[in-house]
Image (cartoon, rainbow, N blue to C red; front, top):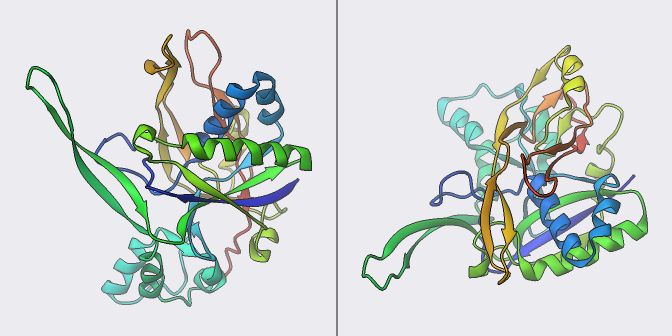
Length: 307
């Protein structure tokens, strides 16, 4: 399988909800990226969806600043993380590690203050107050949260693909999706992006889906039969709730909320396992007029636990 990076440069900002309308996430879980691509494919040609389901792998979308890619902080103990209380607080604040500092971080030789300062150039969370006007005078006032990226910053994700023709298809779908947008509140221009295609950096290329890969770059879950052996060895993970709604369109091509998806809990990207799993597409509809699936096939990265 071949791998490539797609940068997403958002024009206005991005809203990825986390259960509260006044809050928003920075990164995009892979299942949202997959659903967005599949929906775009279905709008063009329903047969395209079948070509995509078993032929690609996706990571979550993580931050970048100019030419610097960030990865999720691995859930491991760093050897030299035993400094004063202020340093420990800086380590705790860290959510992402610059790829250029990755090996230094794993060895325990990095300065957490420096790493946090680098990430400050990425963007900021914004909360806007908005009003839905009503003729009765009972206006609905609410806050909405989203993430605004600074110049030359955005999110990137890794695509694994089996053929050049398939990668060209993804190119076309992402280009089309860039005008539609990804995430919530797309009617306000949030989620619209410019797509930039880049080769994999060597440090990633050498570690992705190798024999000793042990950290997931995809928020995902193992199949039931895989769970039986997953925890035989050492693991360190956290869970993320994955919910959401199934949307349909009415006769006027307007979206209406039809049904809540089955809620699941996935392992968060950055989780470490001694045994690898391959995941699946999990069906999350119940009694709906067509099947709805949640993407859960991880990309793995090798992390040297010995530093």
